Image 1 (cartoon, rainbow over the protein chains, first blue to last red):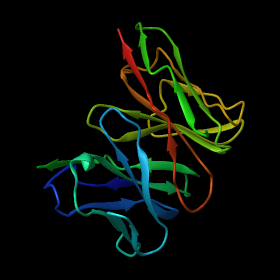
Image 2: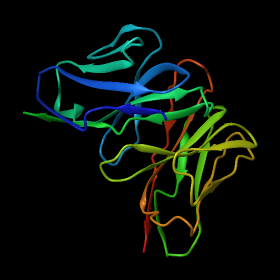
Image 3: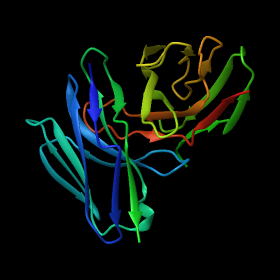
Image 4: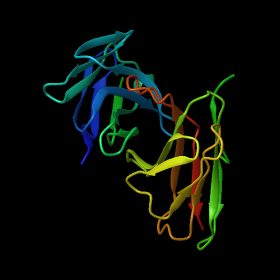
Length: 112
Length: 114
């Protein structure tokens, strides 16, 4: 089967750094994406890693290691508005051509 | 402005009734998806379509049906066979490229069975 595993909850304080990990098992893997979702809202795209290594976008960075089937999202200088759920996602080009699957999400709570 | 629109935002259904959720996009995307999200849960794939007149079942397709007669539209019907339909439904679209999986989501439809 195909799956993405991530922690269910993470808590951190304002100004800190937090890392959200994602391990995946999927055939035909091409890359890992990350999405943010605030309560009651729609998910919005944050980043994509098609190659191994680190991608940086402002306060957010994302990392991928294909050999370890592992990636993470790094959030720096945490702000209260970063409190949300974060999902890793992958598109599968194996038996189910072209589907886009998500992990169960990590709920990040940022405390003052 | 380009985007993806879901309607209605809130929907109430009596048990035993079918109901159709609308999803329209003007992003010229070939790929479209329907997800179900339960409280505190992730996104579970119901159906997806990579091209007009073709669609595939996702992980939880039972009790749902879709059509893809136009590129812009991918309506989802929740049938009476779906035993627990109360949930938040999200529609998304993306370019069907091998690489970047950036998907754009609608604002969702919250379905409640009464």
